[in-house]
Length: 364
Ligand code: AMP
Ligand code: MG
Image (cartoon, rainbow, N blue to C red; front, side, top):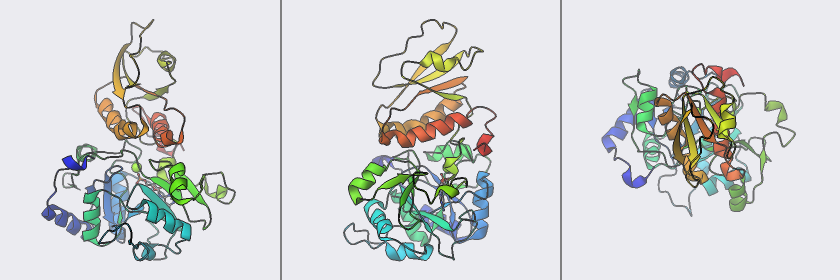
Protein backbone atom coordinates (compact mmCIF):
# COMPACT_ATOMS: atom_id res chain seq x y z
CA UNK A 1 0.00 0.00 0.00
CA UNK A 2 2.41 2.76 0.48
CA UNK A 3 0.27 4.95 2.63
CA UNK A 4 2.26 7.93 1.35
CA UNK A 5 1.20 7.36 -2.23
CA UNK A 6 -2.39 6.49 -1.34
CA UNK A 7 -4.57 8.57 -3.63
CA UNK A 8 -6.77 10.73 -1.46
CA UNK A 9 -10.35 9.74 -1.88
CA UNK A 10 -12.42 12.69 -0.79
CA UNK A 11 -14.90 12.50 2.04
CA UNK A 12 -17.64 13.07 -0.48
CA UNK A 13 -16.69 9.88 -2.30
CA UNK A 14 -16.57 7.90 0.94
CA UNK A 15 -19.98 9.31 1.89
CA UNK A 16 -21.35 8.20 -1.45
CA UNK A 17 -19.91 4.73 -0.82
CA UNK A 18 -21.59 4.64 2.60
CA UNK A 19 -24.90 5.58 0.99
CA UNK A 20 -24.44 2.86 -1.64
CA UNK A 21 -23.92 0.28 1.12
CA UNK A 22 -27.00 1.58 3.00
CA UNK A 23 -29.03 1.26 -0.20
CA UNK A 24 -28.03 -2.39 -0.49
CA UNK A 25 -25.40 -1.82 -3.20
CA UNK A 26 -21.86 -3.13 -3.57
CA UNK A 27 -18.68 -1.10 -3.01
CA UNK A 28 -15.18 -2.40 -3.73
CA UNK A 29 -12.61 -0.99 -1.33
CA UNK A 30 -8.94 -1.41 -0.42
CA UNK A 31 -7.73 -3.30 2.63
CA UNK A 32 -4.16 -3.98 3.67
CA UNK A 33 -4.50 -7.58 2.37
CA UNK A 34 -6.39 -7.44 -0.96
CA UNK A 35 -9.33 -5.41 -2.35
CA UNK A 36 -12.70 -6.46 -0.98
CA UNK A 37 -16.16 -6.42 -2.54
CA UNK A 38 -18.28 -4.94 0.23
CA UNK A 39 -21.96 -5.18 1.13
CA UNK A 40 -24.08 -4.53 4.22
CA UNK A 41 -23.71 -7.65 6.37
CA UNK A 42 -27.25 -7.27 7.76
CA UNK A 43 -28.97 -6.99 4.36
CA UNK A 44 -29.91 -10.34 2.77
CA UNK A 45 -30.43 -8.88 -0.72
CA UNK A 46 -27.03 -7.21 -0.63
CA UNK A 47 -25.46 -10.52 0.37
CA UNK A 48 -27.21 -12.24 -2.54
CA UNK A 49 -25.59 -9.69 -4.83
CA UNK A 50 -22.13 -10.59 -3.50
CA UNK A 51 -22.64 -14.27 -4.25
CA UNK A 52 -24.08 -13.67 -7.72
CA UNK A 53 -21.51 -11.04 -8.72
CA UNK A 54 -18.58 -13.22 -7.69
CA UNK A 55 -20.18 -16.46 -8.89
CA UNK A 56 -19.47 -17.80 -5.42
CA UNK A 57 -21.20 -20.99 -4.24
CA UNK A 58 -23.77 -20.27 -1.52
CA UNK A 59 -22.10 -22.52 1.04
CA UNK A 60 -18.90 -20.45 1.12
CA UNK A 61 -19.12 -18.13 4.11
CA UNK A 62 -18.14 -14.45 4.07
CA UNK A 63 -16.04 -12.44 6.50
CA UNK A 64 -17.67 -9.56 8.40
CA UNK A 65 -15.45 -6.46 8.51
CA UNK A 66 -15.76 -4.11 11.47
CA UNK A 67 -14.48 -0.60 12.20
CA UNK A 68 -12.01 -0.08 15.02
CA UNK A 69 -13.46 1.86 17.96
CA UNK A 70 -13.87 5.57 17.26
CA UNK A 71 -11.04 7.07 19.22
CA UNK A 72 -8.54 4.41 18.50
CA UNK A 73 -6.04 4.21 21.32
CA UNK A 74 -4.01 1.05 21.60
CA UNK A 75 -3.90 1.19 25.39
CA UNK A 76 -7.60 1.60 26.12
CA UNK A 77 -9.41 0.21 23.15
CA UNK A 78 -12.47 -1.86 24.01
CA UNK A 79 -13.47 -4.19 21.21
CA UNK A 80 -16.08 -6.09 23.19
CA UNK A 81 -19.09 -3.87 22.38
CA UNK A 82 -18.20 -3.99 18.67
CA UNK A 83 -17.85 -7.75 18.45
CA UNK A 84 -20.63 -8.68 20.88
CA UNK A 85 -23.58 -8.16 18.49
CA UNK A 86 -22.13 -10.78 16.12
CA UNK A 87 -20.93 -13.57 18.38
CA UNK A 88 -22.36 -15.93 20.98
CA UNK A 89 -19.31 -15.97 23.17
CA UNK A 90 -15.98 -14.24 23.23
CA UNK A 91 -13.42 -16.35 25.05
CA UNK A 92 -10.51 -14.87 26.94
CA UNK A 93 -8.10 -16.19 24.33
CA UNK A 94 -10.14 -14.76 21.47
CA UNK A 95 -10.11 -11.37 23.17
CA UNK A 96 -6.36 -11.61 23.60
CA UNK A 97 -5.97 -12.19 19.86
CA UNK A 98 -8.30 -9.30 19.07
CA UNK A 99 -6.37 -6.97 21.35
CA UNK A 100 -3.02 -8.06 19.98
CA UNK A 101 -3.80 -8.02 16.24
CA UNK A 102 -6.79 -5.78 15.42
CA UNK A 103 -7.01 -3.78 13.35
CA UNK A 104 -4.92 -6.03 11.12
CA UNK A 105 -4.79 -9.09 8.84
CA UNK A 106 -6.19 -11.63 11.31
CA UNK A 107 -9.69 -13.10 10.88
CA UNK A 108 -11.26 -14.95 13.81
CA UNK A 109 -14.09 -17.46 13.60
CA UNK A 110 -16.62 -17.43 16.47
CA UNK A 111 -19.92 -19.15 17.30
CA UNK A 112 -22.40 -16.80 15.67
CA UNK A 113 -25.07 -14.71 17.32
CA UNK A 114 -28.54 -15.78 16.15
CA UNK A 115 -29.06 -12.42 14.44
CA UNK A 116 -26.27 -13.15 11.94
CA UNK A 117 -27.79 -14.11 8.59
CA UNK A 118 -27.42 -17.75 7.64
CA UNK A 119 -26.65 -16.90 4.06
CA UNK A 120 -23.66 -14.88 5.27
CA UNK A 121 -22.20 -17.88 7.07
CA UNK A 122 -23.04 -20.39 4.33
CA UNK A 123 -25.47 -22.05 6.73
CA UNK A 124 -22.81 -22.64 9.38
CA UNK A 125 -23.19 -21.88 13.05
CA UNK A 126 -20.03 -19.77 13.07
CA UNK A 127 -19.11 -16.30 11.82
CA UNK A 128 -15.74 -14.96 10.68
CA UNK A 129 -14.81 -11.40 11.69
CA UNK A 130 -11.90 -9.03 11.23
CA UNK A 131 -11.09 -5.33 11.48
CA UNK A 132 -8.97 -4.25 8.48
CA UNK A 133 -6.15 -1.78 9.11
CA UNK A 134 -6.29 0.17 5.85
CA UNK A 135 -7.24 3.79 6.66
CA UNK A 136 -9.75 4.01 3.82
CA UNK A 137 -11.44 0.76 4.85
CA UNK A 138 -11.56 2.05 8.41
CA UNK A 139 -13.08 5.36 7.36
CA UNK A 140 -15.72 3.61 5.27
CA UNK A 141 -16.60 1.19 8.08
CA UNK A 142 -16.67 3.88 10.75
CA UNK A 143 -19.00 6.06 8.72
CA UNK A 144 -21.19 3.11 7.74
CA UNK A 145 -21.54 2.17 11.42
CA UNK A 146 -22.12 -1.51 10.76
CA UNK A 147 -20.58 -4.75 9.60
CA UNK A 148 -19.60 -5.11 5.96
CA UNK A 149 -19.00 -8.47 4.28
CA UNK A 150 -16.08 -8.15 1.91
CA UNK A 151 -14.78 -11.21 0.09
CA UNK A 152 -11.94 -10.54 -2.32
CA UNK A 153 -13.18 -8.46 -5.26
CA UNK A 154 -12.67 -11.10 -7.97
CA UNK A 155 -14.70 -13.78 -9.69
CA UNK A 156 -14.77 -16.96 -7.68
CA UNK A 157 -11.56 -18.99 -7.97
CA UNK A 158 -9.57 -16.28 -9.71
CA UNK A 159 -6.57 -14.20 -8.68
CA UNK A 160 -7.36 -11.69 -5.91
CA UNK A 161 -7.03 -7.99 -6.81
CA UNK A 162 -4.41 -5.82 -5.14
CA UNK A 163 -5.20 -2.52 -6.90
CA UNK A 164 -8.31 -0.60 -7.92
CA UNK A 165 -7.41 -1.22 -11.58
CA UNK A 166 -7.40 -4.99 -10.95
CA UNK A 167 -10.94 -4.74 -9.60
CA UNK A 168 -12.01 -2.72 -12.64
CA UNK A 169 -10.54 -5.37 -14.98
CA UNK A 170 -12.19 -8.15 -13.04
CA UNK A 171 -15.66 -6.60 -13.25
CA UNK A 172 -15.39 -4.73 -16.57
CA UNK A 173 -18.97 -5.53 -17.39
CA UNK A 174 -20.38 -3.97 -14.23
CA UNK A 175 -20.00 -0.40 -15.34
CA UNK A 176 -21.58 1.21 -12.29
CA UNK A 177 -19.62 -0.76 -9.69
CA UNK A 178 -18.28 1.73 -7.16
CA UNK A 179 -14.56 1.20 -6.52
CA UNK A 180 -12.66 3.16 -3.88
CA UNK A 181 -9.03 3.61 -4.89
CA UNK A 182 -6.61 3.30 -1.98
CA UNK A 183 -3.50 2.45 -3.99
CA UNK A 184 -1.73 -0.90 -3.99
CA UNK A 185 -2.37 -3.28 -1.10
CA UNK A 186 0.51 -3.42 1.33
CA UNK A 187 0.42 -7.14 2.22
CA UNK A 188 -0.90 -8.67 -0.98
CA UNK A 189 -2.38 -11.95 0.33
CA UNK A 190 -5.56 -12.60 2.30
CA UNK A 191 -5.76 -12.56 6.10
CA UNK A 192 -4.72 -15.39 8.37
CA UNK A 193 -7.88 -17.19 9.60
CA UNK A 194 -7.99 -18.73 13.08
CA UNK A 195 -10.98 -20.73 14.27
CA UNK A 196 -11.81 -19.87 17.90
CA UNK A 197 -15.29 -21.39 17.82
CA UNK A 198 -14.40 -24.59 19.65
CA UNK A 199 -14.05 -22.57 22.84
CA UNK A 200 -10.66 -23.90 23.87
CA UNK A 201 -8.29 -24.42 20.95
CA UNK A 202 -7.11 -21.96 18.32
CA UNK A 203 -7.01 -23.66 14.90
CA UNK A 204 -5.36 -22.31 11.76
CA UNK A 205 -7.81 -22.42 8.84
CA UNK A 206 -5.84 -20.30 6.38
CA UNK A 207 -2.18 -19.23 6.67
CA UNK A 208 -1.35 -15.57 6.08
CA UNK A 209 1.16 -12.92 6.98
CA UNK A 210 0.47 -13.32 10.71
CA UNK A 211 2.01 -16.69 11.61
CA UNK A 212 1.35 -19.08 14.54
CA UNK A 213 4.86 -18.24 15.76
CA UNK A 214 4.05 -14.53 15.93
CA UNK A 215 0.72 -15.27 17.62
CA UNK A 216 2.47 -17.37 20.25
CA UNK A 217 5.15 -14.74 20.80
CA UNK A 218 2.60 -11.95 21.31
CA UNK A 219 -0.13 -13.78 23.23
CA UNK A 220 1.21 -17.13 24.46
CA UNK A 221 -1.62 -18.84 22.54
CA UNK A 222 -0.67 -22.03 20.70
CA UNK A 223 -2.24 -22.29 17.27
CA UNK A 224 -2.97 -25.81 16.01
CA UNK A 225 -2.92 -26.81 12.35
CA UNK A 226 -6.32 -27.89 10.97
CA UNK A 227 -6.61 -31.63 11.53
CA UNK A 228 -4.13 -31.60 14.39
CA UNK A 229 -6.84 -31.73 17.05
CA UNK A 230 -9.52 -34.38 17.23
CA UNK A 231 -12.75 -32.52 17.72
CA UNK A 232 -12.73 -30.45 14.53
CA UNK A 233 -11.84 -33.32 12.27
CA UNK A 234 -15.41 -34.11 11.31
CA UNK A 235 -15.86 -30.62 9.95
CA UNK A 236 -12.92 -30.68 7.59
CA UNK A 237 -15.01 -32.00 4.73
CA UNK A 238 -17.09 -28.83 4.71
CA UNK A 239 -15.89 -25.97 2.54
CA UNK A 240 -15.54 -23.70 5.57
CA UNK A 241 -12.94 -21.60 3.84
CA UNK A 242 -13.28 -21.08 0.13
CA UNK A 243 -9.54 -20.59 -0.13
CA UNK A 244 -9.25 -24.16 1.09
CA UNK A 245 -10.34 -25.53 -2.27
CA UNK A 246 -7.44 -27.13 -4.10
CA UNK A 247 -8.04 -24.83 -7.03
CA UNK A 248 -8.21 -21.12 -6.22
CA UNK A 249 -6.44 -17.82 -6.87
CA UNK A 250 -5.83 -19.11 -10.39
CA UNK A 251 -4.51 -17.42 -13.53
CA UNK A 252 -5.73 -18.47 -17.00
CA UNK A 253 -2.20 -19.31 -18.13
CA UNK A 254 -0.89 -22.68 -16.89
CA UNK A 255 1.27 -22.14 -13.81
CA UNK A 256 3.74 -24.60 -12.28
CA UNK A 257 6.36 -24.51 -9.53
CA UNK A 258 9.97 -25.57 -9.97
CA UNK A 259 12.38 -26.87 -7.35
CA UNK A 260 15.65 -24.96 -6.91
CA UNK A 261 17.69 -25.28 -10.12
CA UNK A 262 15.09 -27.59 -11.78
CA UNK A 263 13.35 -25.36 -14.31
CA UNK A 264 13.76 -27.90 -17.08
CA UNK A 265 12.15 -30.66 -14.99
CA UNK A 266 9.06 -28.52 -14.59
CA UNK A 267 8.93 -28.19 -18.37
CA UNK A 268 8.88 -31.94 -18.86
CA UNK A 269 5.24 -31.90 -17.82
CA UNK A 270 4.64 -30.00 -21.05
CA UNK A 271 6.14 -32.22 -23.75
CA UNK A 272 4.70 -30.23 -26.67
CA UNK A 273 7.48 -27.78 -26.35
CA UNK A 274 6.14 -24.51 -25.19
CA UNK A 275 7.79 -21.70 -27.02
CA UNK A 276 7.13 -18.86 -24.61
CA UNK A 277 7.74 -19.49 -20.94
CA UNK A 278 7.90 -16.84 -18.22
CA UNK A 279 10.13 -17.93 -15.35
CA UNK A 280 10.01 -16.13 -12.04
CA UNK A 281 13.44 -16.15 -10.37
CA UNK A 282 14.47 -14.98 -6.90
CA UNK A 283 15.99 -11.52 -7.07
CA UNK A 284 18.82 -12.84 -4.90
CA UNK A 285 19.88 -15.40 -7.51
CA UNK A 286 21.81 -15.31 -10.73
CA UNK A 287 20.20 -15.97 -14.10
CA UNK A 288 19.06 -19.34 -15.35
CA UNK A 289 20.88 -21.14 -18.08
CA UNK A 290 18.87 -22.53 -21.00
CA UNK A 291 21.23 -25.40 -21.74
CA UNK A 292 19.85 -27.95 -24.11
CA UNK A 293 16.51 -26.29 -24.78
CA UNK A 294 17.12 -23.85 -27.58
CA UNK A 295 13.52 -24.17 -28.76
CA UNK A 296 12.10 -22.77 -25.58
CA UNK A 297 12.19 -19.06 -25.13
CA UNK A 298 12.51 -18.26 -21.44
CA UNK A 299 11.98 -14.84 -20.09
CA UNK A 300 12.99 -14.18 -16.53
CA UNK A 301 10.96 -12.08 -14.14
CA UNK A 302 12.52 -11.25 -10.79
CA UNK A 303 10.50 -11.85 -7.64
CA UNK A 304 11.47 -10.74 -4.12
CA UNK A 305 13.30 -13.38 -2.10
CA UNK A 306 11.87 -12.27 1.26
CA UNK A 307 8.46 -13.64 2.22
CA UNK A 308 6.66 -10.34 2.74
CA UNK A 309 8.07 -8.80 -0.44
CA UNK A 310 7.04 -11.92 -2.32
CA UNK A 311 3.50 -11.85 -0.87
CA UNK A 312 3.22 -8.21 -1.85
CA UNK A 313 4.10 -9.02 -5.50
CA UNK A 314 2.48 -12.44 -5.88
CA UNK A 315 -0.98 -11.60 -7.24
CA UNK A 316 0.38 -8.54 -9.08
CA UNK A 317 2.88 -10.76 -10.95
CA UNK A 318 0.30 -13.45 -11.68
CA UNK A 319 -2.15 -10.91 -13.09
CA UNK A 320 0.49 -9.12 -15.16
CA UNK A 321 2.00 -12.33 -16.54
CA UNK A 322 -1.47 -13.66 -17.30
CA UNK A 323 -2.09 -10.68 -19.56
CA UNK A 324 1.17 -11.05 -21.47
CA UNK A 325 0.18 -14.14 -23.41
CA UNK A 326 2.75 -16.65 -22.15
CA UNK A 327 2.26 -20.36 -22.84
CA UNK A 328 3.41 -21.27 -19.37
CA UNK A 329 4.42 -19.50 -16.15
CA UNK A 330 6.95 -21.06 -13.79
CA UNK A 331 7.43 -19.92 -10.22
CA UNK A 332 10.13 -21.07 -7.77
CA UNK A 333 8.92 -23.28 -4.92
CA UNK A 334 8.87 -21.15 -1.77
CA UNK A 335 11.48 -22.29 0.76
CA UNK A 336 10.44 -24.13 3.93
CA UNK A 337 9.48 -22.01 6.96
CA UNK A 338 6.26 -20.75 8.50
CA UNK A 339 6.67 -17.25 7.13
CA UNK A 340 6.32 -18.78 3.63
CA UNK A 341 3.21 -20.86 4.44
CA UNK A 342 0.78 -18.18 3.27
CA UNK A 343 2.33 -17.72 -0.17
CA UNK A 344 3.06 -21.43 -0.58
CA UNK A 345 -0.62 -22.15 0.06
CA UNK A 346 -1.78 -19.54 -2.49
CA UNK A 347 0.74 -20.63 -5.13
CA UNK A 348 -0.14 -24.31 -4.87
CA UNK A 349 -3.85 -23.61 -5.29
CA UNK A 350 -3.13 -21.18 -8.11
CA UNK A 351 -1.18 -23.93 -9.93
CA UNK A 352 -3.93 -26.44 -9.45
CA UNK A 353 -6.62 -24.21 -10.87
CA UNK A 354 -4.54 -22.57 -13.61
CA UNK A 355 -5.02 -22.96 -17.34
CA UNK A 356 -7.67 -21.85 -19.81
CA UNK A 357 -10.32 -24.29 -18.61
CA UNK A 358 -9.81 -23.61 -14.93
CA UNK A 359 -13.41 -24.18 -14.01
CA UNK A 360 -12.07 -26.73 -11.56
CA UNK A 361 -13.06 -24.85 -8.42
CA UNK A 362 -15.30 -27.66 -7.38
CA UNK A 363 -12.51 -30.19 -7.69
CA UNK A 364 -11.70 -29.80 -4.02
P1 AMP B 1 -12.42 -14.32 0.67
O1 AMP B 1 -13.37 -15.03 -0.24
O2 AMP B 1 -11.08 -14.10 0.05
O3 AMP B 1 -12.98 -13.15 1.36
O4 AMP B 1 -12.12 -15.32 1.83
C1 AMP B 1 -12.81 -15.26 3.02
C2 AMP B 1 -12.63 -16.52 3.72
O5 AMP B 1 -13.17 -16.58 5.06
C3 AMP B 1 -13.35 -17.56 2.95
O6 AMP B 1 -12.43 -18.51 2.54
C4 AMP B 1 -14.41 -18.00 3.87
O7 AMP B 1 -14.79 -19.30 3.62
C5 AMP B 1 -13.79 -17.82 5.24
N1 AMP B 1 -14.81 -17.85 6.28
C6 AMP B 1 -15.83 -17.02 6.42
N2 AMP B 1 -16.65 -17.41 7.41
C7 AMP B 1 -16.14 -18.54 7.93
C8 AMP B 1 -16.55 -19.44 8.96
N3 AMP B 1 -17.66 -19.25 9.65
N4 AMP B 1 -15.77 -20.51 9.19
C9 AMP B 1 -14.66 -20.71 8.50
N5 AMP B 1 -14.23 -19.90 7.51
C10 AMP B 1 -14.96 -18.83 7.21
MG1 MG C 1 -11.03 -14.77 -2.39
